[in-house]
Image 1 (tube, rainbow, N blue to C red):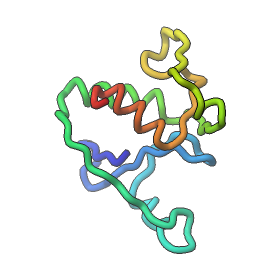
Image 2: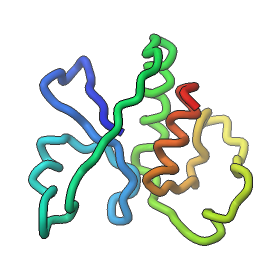
Image 3: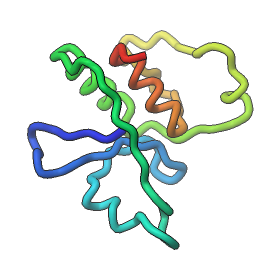
Length: 118
């Protein structure tokens, strides 16, 4: 996910799930030097999605990021074949179980669900 924050208006951030870092929030200025032929990322592509960016949505995004950043990357056949989301009840975490793992598109899908986009 590509984000901009009022507190740092001159910077663009990416939220991503990678095998080495798990879920991380990175500055575009850092990532851009790692994109290109022969580098960590061959290319970077994004899609813009139009939706109502209400105060409630922004609050939910902040809450989602606080719970998601730092979680581990996870991808396996059991996860890909699962027919429903597994959720443990944890009163300290409203949106994401602390043992949850994410792969890249799963992270975006979860964020879209939390934000009411999907």
